[in-house]
Length: 187
Image 1: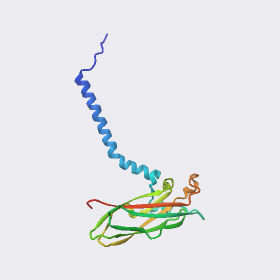
Image 2: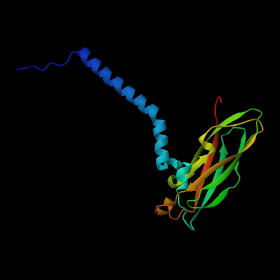
Image 3: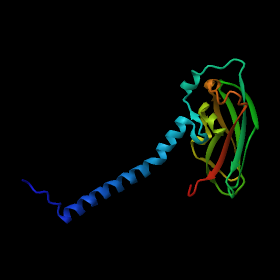
Image 4: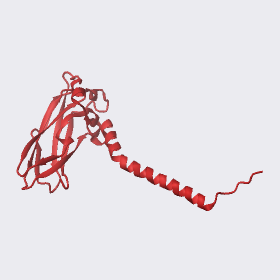
């Protein structure tokens, strides 16, 4: 008959340390991967008002929903203390659903120094974000404006015709696209 003896305390401590180390490494890995994974999740689902992105080829394949339109409202903000004026040329556009449309925003650096900014963006209502698709946008890259410089910043987008099949959004009349420019530290 074999006797079951408990493992020696130092073996048990080593095993606990290895398990704790593996858990710590796993948590660090998840923490590191969480931002890109969250971004991918938001872009795929429209969660939190994150609009979709499409390539030129994908946008070319979208069919226009004849006779169906949507009002798109534009909102432009800058962080407090950022010396930029930022605004849309048009506050609203009425667009054919499925039609690729261009909106222009204007930015002006009011300071005497070059300023680099990055835009965060969202769509509201949040549920509409999965149907609001950007093809090209100034928000995909950092923007540097020289002292006193003004620039036009285009965004090319469309409202996906699949929005017409969403029973929760069938009475939606307006989507808001909002941008906020943040100063990029050290840039």
